[in-house]
Image (tube, rainbow, N blue to C red):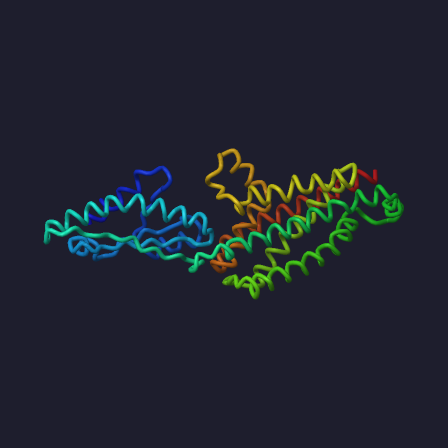
Length: 315
């Protein structure tokens, strides 16, 4: 109705909101499940009639996977719509009975009904734990043996570089898997974070990311000149970017375009939204296949890079 279009006009006057129209609510819900939109503003069918009665309502559905983003969007949308809605309600009610009307924006938080920041933080902390365990520990493997002189004992054996990579990664993969299980148990029973996605999908995606982190650390170990340098490189290349540029602390869309482009080259940037969606939103197979495919590509590249690094050292 014309009244509904007037009510939505406030959303087009702010640079913080990019409104997109959907014909049906189901289409909008599907878009929010796929993380294409962050909120849904729903105008009920009886909006015009209730507006003339001075008690109109507008529904705001928020994606609660990121409570910080959801709270900011709620403030922007409410501020953008309250003034035009209030003016319409006042005019309609005054024409009807001479009283002032009211319009309320009723919000509902999806995937995080209680707006609990713990639900948002705990899956992100799992990403940081896997990053730290994977990259930091394996970054000391090769360089430590090289400094002690024990690596030469492997060079005189017929072991292949790829076999050496697998042998070095396997114990830490088991250790990381144990830490992952502990994190999942604590997140569910201690912090009461819901696990709406499949447990097997969460485990498989986490193991894939753990392999990426381990391979990155092993590659750093093969290139570094000392254990101290290797540990610092692991923190700077893996852990710090994972914490600052993966979406754990900041919404990446609020960062400069150049930083956004750089963040897309980080494995954690692809794993962070995946594990949060699996925990809070459920199995989004398009997201799972896309992000797991990217992580698999990183794993293959880094394992091959580690193999080449060791082969060059042998030569």
